[in-house]
Length: 426
Ligand code: UD1
Image (tube, rainbow, N blue to C red; front, side, top):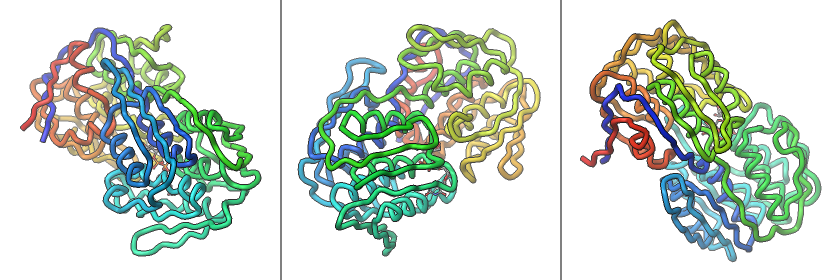
């Protein structure tokens, strides 16, 4: 099993290319189920989760041809074609490994009139139910039953457009419903829809495939159903979580970094916070630049929220930054329960953090100390890498398969800007 070894203290200098977004690529891949024509995706990151999704699609009868990108940060190309579906069932074994597998439900019901998809089951970051996905499909006229841990959904006569108001914002439920509604009869209105840029990206790809959608980027999305979708090519948007992670890493380690192939507006909520902490951020014509000199970061408070708020997927990384900042920071997690699993590991590195319900109170210490730590989920594990960059001595992050699910060649990207980091196979 691989692990990552970091020796802290090096300042970062240089350029980091940002990859395509995992959380955009996964729903885009699922969208290939909506048509028998090919969907070609470019700027696809090479990640374990993307490979899982391709495996699931192949099981369903989709031909998935992968062509890797040339250099670091160059995305790959997937040509996906669901000419005939070989099945409409997604087994527990695959959905358990990756919750985003659940995104095949809407497209399968819309295209084939039937789907059997395992419930995602327990997850390390809270209960994460799928009730919103199911209620929305029912509103579109599907019959939904739960049997032995599986969702069985059918709509023999096809789906019908409906007015669906989500009780709270869910990225996945918005995506599943958006995809399903493209092939429903008549008009669908989604209210309180998620506004995450990945939904915009999915919507733009669906439009390129012939879907009729308006209101993308707002909480009210209108979909006019069409009878079929056609071939399209679409470039996956830049990964805003990777962008934010490297921006925060620069604040943690100090130095001067340019992130290329990305856009400042994707981390709009993060920039003012990083500025208050003491970094300078500027847009460049290739992305954005981040600079922090030797002065110690200053503590600020943050609360996670749906887009355009501060992303929950950057909460752990921001906590690693606050762990060495000057002052006390209150970090509130409002999206997921139980998303503070990185706290005990940061404590092992000498951080001073107290968790009170959905709030972590972080009192910055002068210096963290390297230690062996264990990754528990994707974002938690990268926060430990960040902490290691600022720590005195050596940090070993174990169980890095979590990192490989969502960060493309992380250690290569860090080492080319001067971090002392390497992957070790043990
Ligand atoms: C997506 C992202 C994930 C990110 C999250 C929030 C992907 C592949 N994953 O996950 O990285 O952390 O958005 O930005 O894009 N909920 C329900 N019932 C439902 C659906 C969700 O109660 O039917 C709850 C969840 O438990 C959670 C909240 O709603 O507390 C938000 O979850 P959601 O936005 O659906 O997250 P995902 O789409 O799973």
